[in-house]
Length: 153
Image (cartoon, rainbow, N blue to C red; front, top):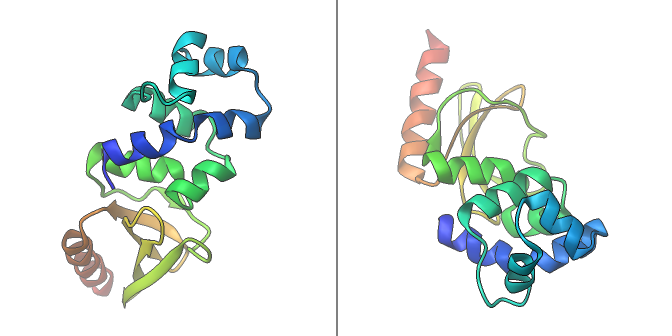
């Protein structure tokens, strides 16, 4: 998944997300910091949202079931991973991947998972803390090995 795919997916769901929240077009435009005219254009699929607007949408509506169904478990993690190409610092507790994730590999106290929807990878420890995220499987496997070796020392 890349920026354009996320823009395509979320632009087409903007009205559903607004309806899910129960917002008027005026309120939704205000929350997103765009004009009502721009919002109407996006909702009618005459134009697409910008990357900045999509990031704001994911941040401000991160609890949206519609966004989760499009991007998977953690919309902000997907956005952050795309923006930075990978995340390689511990980022805190997750739910452990019971719904949106499949396990790829375990090494020591770490496991590599892939999101079933966005297809990005992440590494969690035994406490379900996220250590790494990327869309590159080979890089994720390499980082899993590095983390596992470091845990042995």
